[in-house]
Image (cartoon, rainbow, N blue to C red; front, side):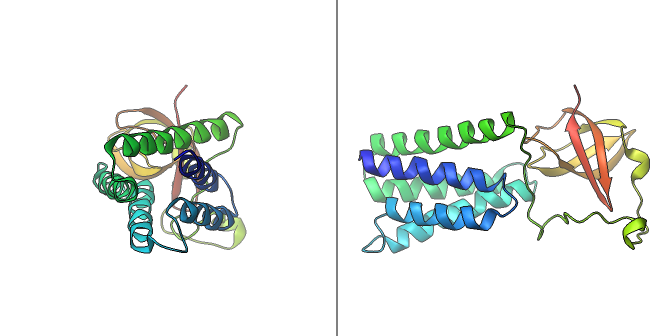
Length: 200
C-alpha cells in the first residue's frame, strides 16, 4: 500500500509540474509511466489504467473549456472509480484521493511561489506574439484593454470570460485559476489573446 501511494504521489507531482513547463510532454510521459506502476502495469489492470487516464484527460480539458466544472467533476468521478477498482476498499480509495489532490495542490503552490506561470498548450493558445511588427494582421486589436480593470464572469481555468466596462471578452489567466467575480486587470495582449491577472 505504501509503495502504491508513493507512486501515486510521485505521478501527481510530475504531472502537475508539466503544467508549469514549456516542454511539458516529457513530464506528461514520465508521469503516465509512474501512474502505470501504480496500476500494476504492464502485468495487469490495463483497462483500469485507461479509465484513470480518461478521467485525467477530462480534468485537463476542464482547464481549457470553462463549463462550470462539469467536465472536471466527471473526470474526478472517473478517477475515483479507477482507484476503487484497484483497491476495492473505501478507506484506501479515500487515502489515494487525498494524497493525489494534496500533492497536486502543494506542487502547484510551490511552482507558483517560485514565480512560474501556467503554460498553455500551443494547440489551445498561441504562444507566439501575433502583432504587426511580427508580420501578423488581425481585424481584432485589443491593445486598448491593457491595464484596464474588470471582473471575471466565469471561472478562469485558465481560459474563461471577463467583463470590462460591461463588454464581455474571452481571457486567459496569467497565474493560478481564478473563480468568477474576481477583480482582474489586463496585463498584456498578444494578437487576439487577452492575458489577465488578479487585481492587487
